Length: 333
Image (cartoon, rainbow, N blue to C red):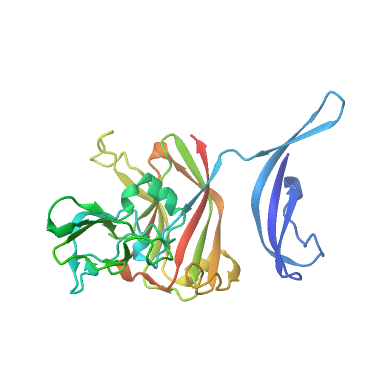
């Protein structure tokens, strides 16, 4: 027997209500609490329930989740070039140029990738997989001899390490001035376009159930955004597996204006600014949920992947925040 966990907005209580119902009963039509009108009805979870009789004749019940493991994918902040780590270009041991006080050292590149200060959700996991995303700053005292690795000040501190980084400007500011003959170099990743892909691991399939679009009310959209599904293309003349397995765009959704996000979605209540100046939200957050009538089936055997495509480069989005979240279940093929 299948049970669905519904969430809906109660117009009289002015809040979301959750209710389990047997699948055969269909979705709720009135609020379970007060019988009031409801809206924004969605299924947030489904469970199958099997019944059996034990040795004493008592009813046994066990609940089983739907097949597959839950997996979320979070895009970088479209408004923040320093968050776009995927496809970023590594710069190795670049010499930095000092100012007259030998305190601020500059690189020739702006928008260093920053996965140390909360710009990307689950950035700690990303760093575990690719430690090189964390910048390395070294000093050679007197211009000769060994290079000494220095430590960046921790988030919220200005003196528990050796230096701070302005990731937008690509500058390193030391807590104490360096010597006039000291050399300073840095290894880091710099932003190199907008790239975000969702790819299942080998032998797996992803079922994309829904996506959320979140943005603060100061966001300005200056570019098109598209979700594109790409798959293997055996008809391509260069197809020669396993060395050459080109892909072709199979399906896509394009959004050219902010209102496009809302024409096929349902809104959630706006979150007001909160959380403080350092780690909070400075502007209200608007969320639109894209509920797909059927899930997107992304199979590794087909080379399938979802690409988030943004045009117009660094000026595509401005403001505090704009991102997308994809909820999927991961199963064996």
